[in-house]
Image (cartoon, rainbow, N blue to C red; front, side, top):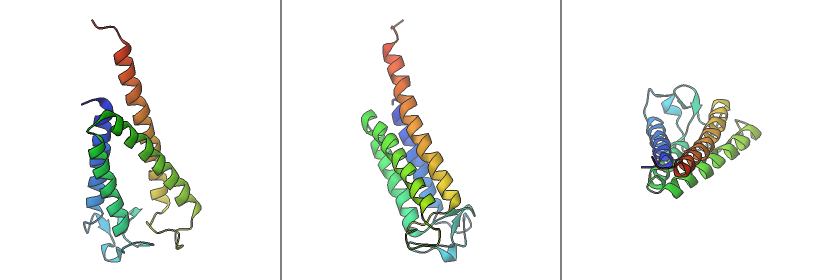
Length: 142
């Protein structure tokens, strides 16, 4: 497995884990307030706003990451495009009000900063793993 595939696998598995944890009472506080979509009082780890839709998006994103990891090109695309999606989600979440109809996932301030970190991290992983692979292929065989 190439480094980019490993990175996509780890990212996909992390998204799957977060999606599952969002459905577990105790790990998700105020679980009784978990709504289908929109503003929800449920908080993953007592910090990140979640809903059924939000959890399902994480699960789907995780499955896509694991499937993409089967080939280097699709793994790289997952990291780069997926990272871009998370940066756009950060912009969107920062622009809307937390208690507005536009907050359909839902997201809060903690989610917004996490999304920026995830987006930047995924893009960086895509770039760094590509650079590592190119450096390895350019080096002379000993």
